[in-house]
Length: 176
Image (cartoon, rainbow, N blue to C red; front, side):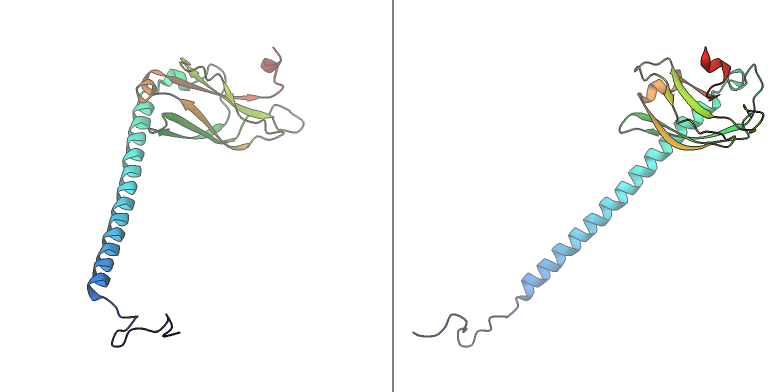
């Protein structure tokens, strides 16, 4: 039965390379790599622009804070640490309740409290209701690291107030 199919024709190398095809393939790969690099750069710029817009919105909201809203008619004891971000693509205000410090001790014996944080939008145009952190038992320095999302359009941010209350579980106002 004649020559096997694995043999090549005389004078012809089966592994011979075509330089034009190799060069064209190399150019195509270079173009693809450059396109991917440009897309990555564009995505980075888009994220940067979104973060800048979010920062501008938050700065404008901070400037509008009314000192009477910040002050309470009762004694204020302690601090709360929060973080805010507005997600323009999903139209979400993200509020992270990080922690509280130096809270008032509810229990005189243990010198501790059972604090939690309550967040409420006014007006609540999208019926979010109040959002509440978990209760951290017997501490004056609770760490929450909880993120809450409020669906709202960017233009609603300036006309909406976020009321943040730090309360103690079992405190007389909680029983009423």
